[in-house]
Length: 298
Image 1 (cartoon, rainbow, N blue to C red):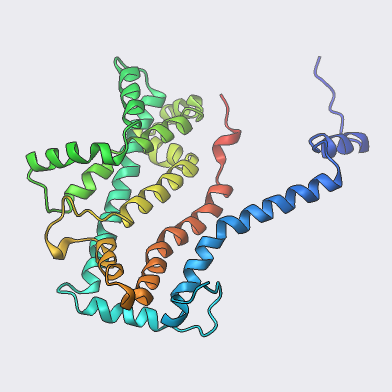
Image 2: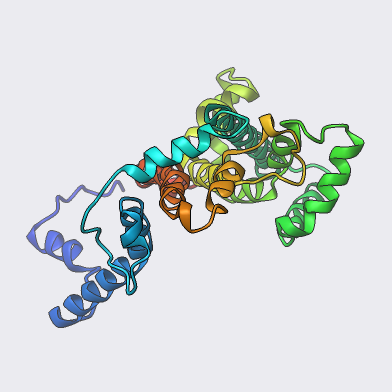
């Protein structure tokens, strides 16, 4: 027999409203929020202190014990930074272009190649699929310091040393994105993919219009990691021509100027962290709003 529909009553509403209430007192809630607030202040203090240092004059930067908040804030450190950069043989805009080009192209290829490989491994069984995935997992065990020499030797054999490709191609082959994307794509229902194929959708259409939007939290997270790695890369081991060097290398030369350049060096810290932090702040809200895969089940 068909079950008769019974609307929710006040007892049901009260039950569902309070069934997940944690078993702790109001004092426990207050203590928890105080601890979380203290941890948040602890984590944000280094960032806040770096920004404050960028607006301190030289005498306050040399003061001991130092003041957290500048007493006489100034923007001279940023103007001095551009003056120092103007004395270099390569203009500041060239360093910025190199970094932006490598970061954008490297991140795009990192996400796309990793996502396409993860889609095949997550949704299709073929001979050797388990072996390839185990190979990717083992590749995550090695840090960039371990793979630096093999990467350099490979780039030498390909005659790509001192080119942008020596930075972009290794970013394409990062194993982290494929591992994370595969874990997310395994939760995407295969029934939706099969229904799309019955409707006449091609594999590329399914991948771009169905799968990728539903694993947005994963590739947004990988975008943050990739941008952070490429933006802060020095690349001094594979890039020798000054006109192809990265912004991080140029700014490190400013920081090596000694006490006289402590002001511009403080401004360098803000310049280097502003892009990754801005990307994280914008992506964080999108990640929280697009957790679509959490409710999808076969």
